[in-house]
Image (cartoon, rainbow, N blue to C red; front, side, top):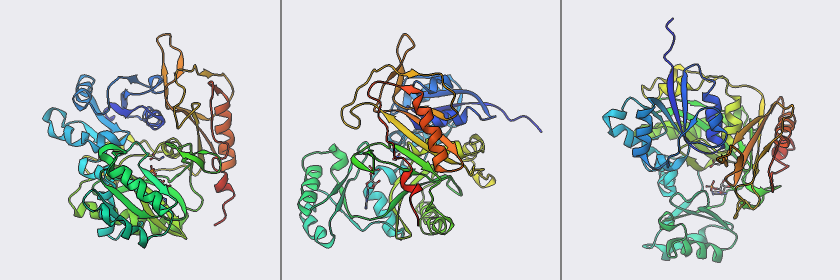
Length: 435
Ligand code: AMP
Ligand code: GLY
């Protein structure tokens, strides 16, 4: 057998998700050198961080050419929605580089809530009933709200840094929110169009697939903990923790998810002429045993990735490289039966105005959990500082949630910064859940 060629690989992004990708890819037999654009205080331990804006495609292309990067994994949604894949495909000198992520048309499933809602409705994919409003038909909002009952879900159409979904308890509140988005520029152009939908009651689960446009592999599912306070209280965050696997995601539920959601999504993308090559994140809700789509994302979740990747035993790089030639069907994913839990440590004040620049102390203790940096950076003296709201993600593994949590918590205890906060109840709802 010939030894496979080792290649240089790049990752775009600077969060815990990207550190987890860097950690996973750094174990690949196919890796030569790893570059993270721009990366964080953790990724620099695994490869070379190169500062660049994720939307500066010209500079990213130059970095790829200068460093002979053959595979580029796109972490966050913004460059995908802005068309980084189409940009690379349009330049002959970049054609040899495989980019993991959908093209602009595919990323519209995340970039426009109206586009994704219409896609689901015309293809019979279960989702909340909804109507879309803009300045032309805002007068009809009242009639639509009368058909729904409280609470009402109001969604800015475009990307709004995870803040564009507002749950309104009253009809008046919903009308105010819709007007603020359409007329007062809340969320700027992202809010010029608004999707107003019924509220679905249930437990959410994040399901992930990697697709080459022809076939797909399913990744482990995860549960995300979105709110800042214990017991899911207080303002929304980027995600305070994750658990994988999810107990109610049993065979029967998985079968429904595959038949009612995943298959029709990929089949209809194909039918509509969209070759989707990258990760798809199905944000689902379990309503009395039936899955509905809350949202699609064109990328992996954060912090779900920090719990999902540690459970994947297969080398992901061969799968990534198969996307371009649509040979993903040749691969199976080996997944550990262990449970992974991730606890996110955040800066004081997050998700509001938060402290930055606090020194981070890493204690030398005996623990076997995983540490993924998110908002960290090193200063010119080499000291590690907080540099974002979500500072670090601590992942533990075990034969059940309790064991995994113990490891995640002990990892967390080895890292200190002033004002550090984390939720103490990640995973507890699943321990207590009997369905
Ligand atoms: P985001 O991740 O910012 O899009 O936030 C969306 C969150 O809002 C979801 O994770 C749900 O918790 C909630 N959400 C969105 N749509 C609905 C819906 N139709 N019914 C109930 N909750 C929803
Ligand atoms: N954790 C949710 C997301 O990445 O959107």
